[in-house]
Structures are given as structure tokens and as C-alpha cells.
Length: 134
Image (cartoon, rainbow, N blue to C red; front, side, top):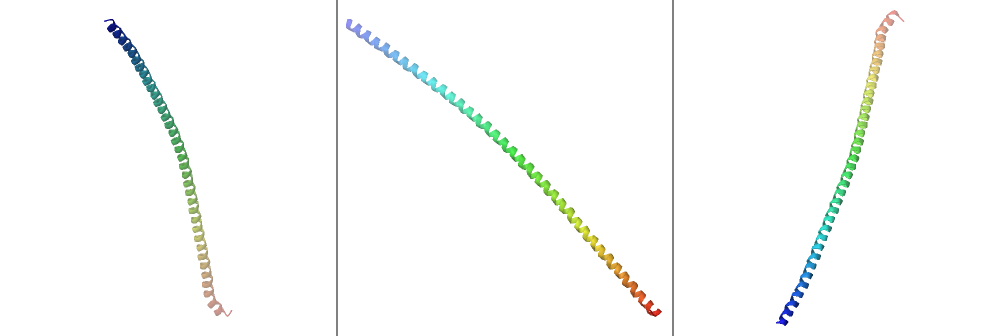
């Protein structure tokens, strides 16, 4: 009976030790799980921070690209304006050229008219001179 009590006491002591070990392991497991959870939360926070940084970088990059595009557009607009101005200058030059050609044509017509008038006068005055004996 004594032996049985001793055995029972020994088995109770072992059981208490194993219960303590189990509690320790479960506590260390829960601590490691909570630590890994907090690490994953920190990682997810850092990932979201890096995502927000990359988003802000992409936004600033797109803004600078749009600014470059607007500058390019304004440059193309100024180029088109200068092209329109040069076209209008060419048009005015061609109009001047056309006007000068018209003026030279009218000059040649007036010269031809004056020459024909002179020849008409000469042809009319020659028989008159012949009659007078000149």
C-alpha cells in the first residue's frame, strides 16, 4: 500500500512536470505565433507603405509626364501657329507677286495700246503727208 502511494505520488509529480512543460510549450508557441503575427502585420504595414510610396511616385511621375506632354503640346501649338503665320506670309507674298504680274500686264497692255495708237496716228497721217507733197 505504501508502495502504491509512492507510485501514485511519483506519477502525480511526473504529471505535474509534464503539465508544466506543456504549459510552457503552449505559452512559447502562443508567444511565437503572436510574434509572427505582429511581424506579418509589420510587414504588411511596410508593404502598404511601400505601395503608397510607389503610388505617390507613380503619381508624381505621371504628373511630370503630363507636364512634359503639355509643354510638348504648347510647343506643337506654337509651331503650328508659326506655320500658319509663315503660310499667311507666303500667301501675302504670292498675292503681291500676282498683283505685280497684273501690274506688269497692265503696263504692257498700256504700252501696246500706246504703240497701236502711235501706229494708227502714223498710218492716218501718212496719206495726209502724201497729199500735201511732203
